[in-house]
Image 1: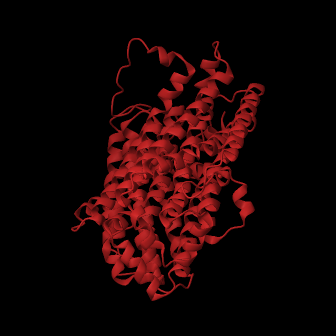
Image 2 (image 1 turned 90 degrees about the vertical axis):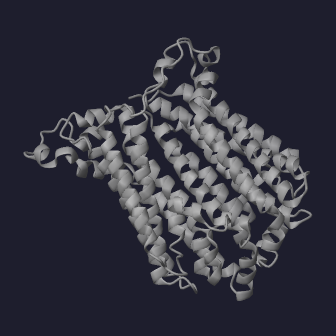
Image 3 (image 1 turned 135 degrees about the vertical axis):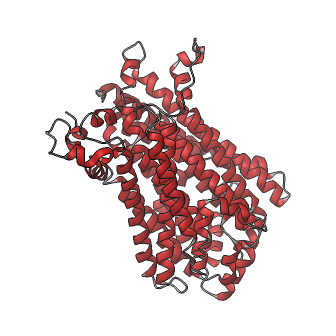
Length: 555
């Protein structure tokens, strides 16, 4: 008997009246406690990362824009259509205090991360449970048909409310001018409301498809569409498109400026409607199935699908396409403001010092070099997810039938690692193209296209090292595979924020991304790139060697 079934009470005698009293929601409380126990590390990490990131950003705004003149210069540069698309509605600029700056530039960005957290919570405790067969096992006991979804929504709601409360308390206690207690409470509530909306969206998408990755991908596409609608609306004159996005609703609370609470009612209404729709759709399908019927496959598989690499490509293609499109848009957004970089940053001393340390012939080049770290970190998120797909296949029991044939463990896991490395490189390529094309249009310098593409591809060896770290953990310490996420998180904190906050140089050297030449500002140096490539090859070999020596973990 597994720990999951023990926790949920499978095999134990039901207490009198449990089934009759609970009905469709019977066992919800037990499933909530079980989900909280499973996420006892995952959710606190999410919440603390979002909290600390917000508090550090609020402090940095207060330091970087400490005088009215600094804030006036920020208003002048952020008032362009490109600046508004990257941040939020123009009304924040009317009284650009440190608080207004936080709501203008950070609320839309962190709302995306809160939405991601909510989506992952819902799919993890609903569709993923059905895909592994645990939901069917639990529902054969005294567990109601709506208990799994109700428990997942309860956990997501609790996580969002805790995050909102901590943001309100943390920001209210900073003592920064323009960041008052009332506005901080609204700032936290806005994050919680957006998180509830996307939890409701995930409650619907988990009913549509039979696979957790499909449900997650569809929900993430909705988050992306919401952000694009917000950006398009805020960069225009009327801003009408922003009213089609829950992220736009949260920003139109005008936190720390007007403190309007009523737009959050729209978020709560949409969240309730999506949750109700999810419950209704769940009654129209079988356990393990989706509302959308699966298309019948071809009668004969293509020759490529009969190879380990072809199968891995098939499994990874959706995620790779999503990250590729997202990175292209991300690069294009940063490139669109490249021509205004000098005006935006000329009066910010701390950023000027960071850019001077990077070097280069101009602020635009140094700014592009700094931003390229963020692009590379996002690509690193993809490669970690792709490299750990082999671990998911193993724990789901799908690897064992493959390895029972003539397929070796090295070829099976190596195909996933190869797709991770090649897909990460492709993601960098399209990001560099987006950055270069938009940057060339913004500056009028067509030579930026190949230079920015090269600057993005220079981070490929660092991505390969990231894949190698994941391979070592998967091969030797499979239960600690999630520790591979430390690499991209550390790279962002030290490689990007550390440039502004002046972290010691040795901290940057601990990250593979810290050894990449900061193109296009710096000169190309092949030595660190070759060393990173050799390190990546050694780590992959070591990880595959560990996989050959250990037992598989199956269901």
